[in-house]
Image (cartoon, rainbow, N blue to C red):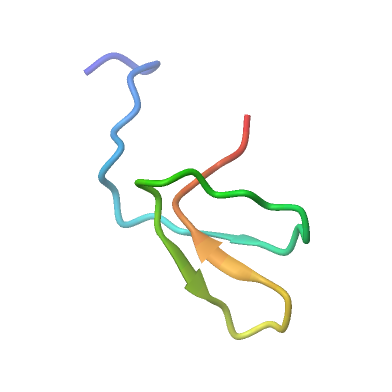
Length: 45
């Protein structure tokens, strides 16, 4: 795997509190402990 290759199946989740977040199908979204935020494996470009 090269450094620029992305692995779409990881257990890494990021906290996102952006109210306009649109997560594409195939990515996970879970509620976070902070109101208005989610945990997701989608990182917008």
